Image 1: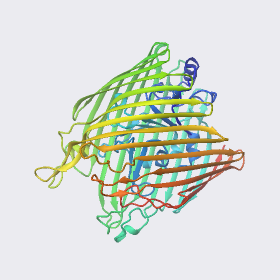
Image 2 (image 1 turned 60 degrees about the vertical axis):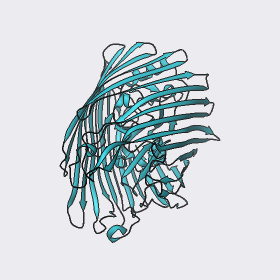
Image 3 (image 1 turned 45 degrees about the vertical axis):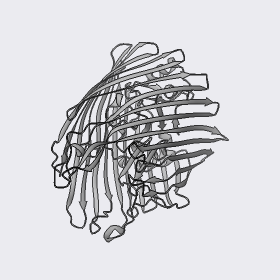
Length: 624
């Protein structure tokens, strides 16, 4: 279930006892323990970097649990994110194809992607390859809508998506799963995780392969072939909780991918990419006193991509980002209901590529502070962060929020926040040539975000209605200069405003989830729509169990979007429907079937690229 904020409030004292029982670091906790009663609210950490009951969160947050991931029968993270409220996805075809993510109308690269607290984006492109992350390795996902740069720094203009990998702290058991589907798709996954006394562990492996379909509409030369994709992933972890309350954990995630694609400019070639995403971190927490907990994270992340041509056998380009990261956080309970968080954040990016960049590394360090408090019916939050980047100097961001509980059923939340995005290595350091060059004088993109939310909680219905506005300035666009050489400049400004409705209900034995967003993402100079964003975005799902049989129905609808800045090229709106079936053959064995795009809708998310028609996936899972 994709849960959103609800004003129903769990008892704070009980919540604190539950959190202490888990033994997880404050900055790393992902969920209540499995033994906790379902009456207690879920706990989220991404919106504040501290555990907060979902009902108490002053940020707009949605949660995708492990159970919901299995219910969706997703084969890629993009399948999951496409069902989330206010997230708009554009891609260049089928599985493994290049994907862009737009949160509340902001640009691709304006949504920070974290895996277990660490950045995994490419420093050259400035965005993360989310299409390569396999749901088989994921325990849960937290999606924060709205800027969080005062906590995380660059990239969090539109929001933050944090993926928590499977580590044995929230679920246990062993399994093996196999599936087959359209386009000769086959998948195999196996894993085990659990806890033994103070030790927790997990090991999960998966493999997915498909022949794909023809991504590019242009069928000149070799472009008429199907574009296959292969993904091999592994996730391993081990953690230990000491009697003193100290906790330490080591996590490892790696994904290897082979993705075929087409080139409209070179149809005689057969290009494909070999890529790898790797994330390793060591995390620990220590209760210094009964009111002070300190946590530390050390890690490294890699994004590696090699482009090749099967016809010539040549390597046409390779790019590797290595990011070393350190994070230190201290949480102090000043009094009941009042928490002060102090943190230090450091990362260094290093780029190795076939392109000779003017600079190959840069570092960023930051200090931040955050206060959270509660007085009677009023919740308060204020934060400030100062980043010092080796490339462009210092940048400061802040945020503030107030939540007022109007009654047992209603809550009002007002939030303001600043965001920024650092120029990428491509923007600043692309080598000068006769036609293009980087611009080392670029300034960060900056934003100011305001939102107002009314939340309601009734017997079998939770809902939230949120208005938001996000003004983004210093947007970076590439344009020809006086010497006719294309360079990036801080020339654009965007004005984004809209509203979103999230609803969760349990009616007639069905679990209903609805997310609807209306957004106007406009170029401030021309008043044109920003490209590849749709104004209206609707997701609706309904799920029910009939004894051993489970049934799920999903509908997604979006209106038109434009593929060029003057809005002369339009991609039409569409609506698709999917059905999911599950049947428990025994206490250990389950069979699943997913039918997608039931009406075989022909639509485009990116100009010139196909989307899949009617397709299916069948699988069986055996659990020990």
